Image (cartoon, rainbow, N blue to C red; front, side, top):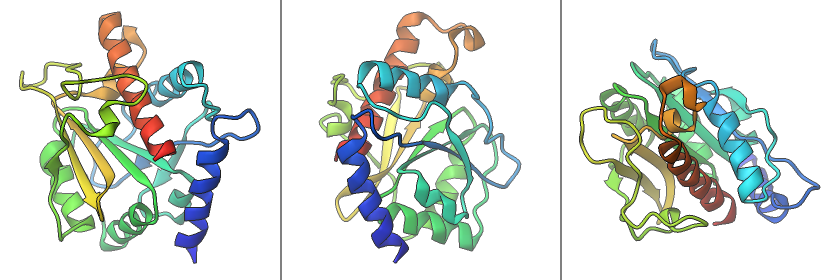
Length: 218
């Protein structure tokens, strides 16, 4: 029953998100394991502001924080996970996240550096039957209002590798987007936090806006 209600909720949001009569809210995932799930505190606020100004969305300016195992996750069509360290999902949390994503939710993961080995292990608990695959540059998520013909922009150096977008697809639908060697979350933060050039800050926000637009209109 919860899946049906959430599906109808998503339809309602896609219809009214771009009007002034409705505000959807996005959320930050809180997880166990000791990793800093709370990093980049200004990133989602800045992303929402950018989307409201440039996509004419009407997203609520304050984001929520939701435990990965909570039924409240169904209140948020888009959830974001980040951090530098360990992530642990219990069996119940993995099952809750899987059901949320199958029902129509979307998870964006941004490697804040040091997250990779842990998040790959935990997402395998959520979708044991599949693997992360690289999202092709031709995928619509890179070609919403802003076009990124070469995929993700490179925001932070990390190990100097090219940025990669990995995805989990369920029945042909992209349900998880994982940005690696990119760090969109840091790029969304206030520029003085990391002293990023304005051009990088803008690229990160534009790619983030593409993700939001893709989630709410596809």
